[in-house]
Length: 354
Image (cartoon, rainbow, N blue to C red; front, side):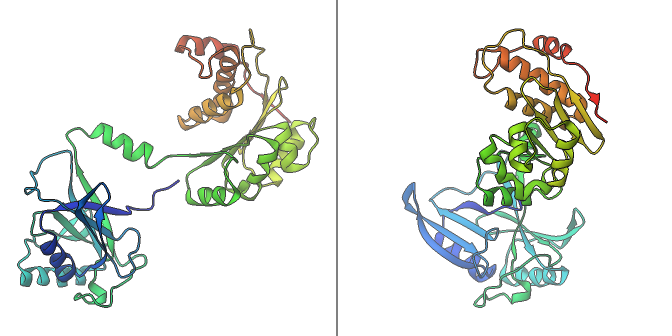
């Protein structure tokens, strides 16, 4: 699922009345809610936003008697607020001067005009020109004219002593490169998730014939799916012993651009934009538990594809992972790189299917 923005940002004030004056009278935001901190009911919780309290426009404050911030690292160091156009920034530069707000001159940051300023308690902000893109919901009672009102949150700046861990969370966890779904979800949720991925690939594991049919409405959005022959039958009506060419034709007709189809000890059928092939899975050296073999095959194949391997090579790694899952008595197989290499050596190369 793609993140489309920041829902809200919460900070602390030691002076709730002065905080309210600044954010409503100077910045022109609407006080949309005044409640208490649910974990500490002695403290107010103030919510400021646009005219309709739109998600992505909220600034909230807890009211605690704390000393002014000590600037350093491990913190939100500046909060961006969006306005529409350089004319609006000129308006704000004059307003800040007239109101005695600590503000810098208009500058350019990453190619966008901006003004950096502080609230009376030293919270650091940046007004930034968003070009007027997207919806805006003005507050009719704001002291700021509708054309110049703050439209919502912009970029948030974080200060950290070492970039690596934070970068990993932001780029790999919160902004995933791929979506992997199963039809355990209802059709409406599958529709929303696949629609949210835009240009990023969505993969699916079919789970069961009864649930696989939930994928039918979103097949054209999937980059790839992992199915067995019974799940293919549920989606296409093809008989269970259909040959590889008919399986591929049927799934393509259903809108699926690429797939891996398993069938017990039968060859695994795979296809994508480069063609169709079959891979004969190696016989297990011993069978401990077949549960999880399909998930292991799908997970390892997707991981290899994300590392840049073509499907044919990636599926060999998937087949090796499935072999180790079948041979392991553990629910989560425990194996070394040498174990995986030995299993991979047992997996033959994929063969073209005419």
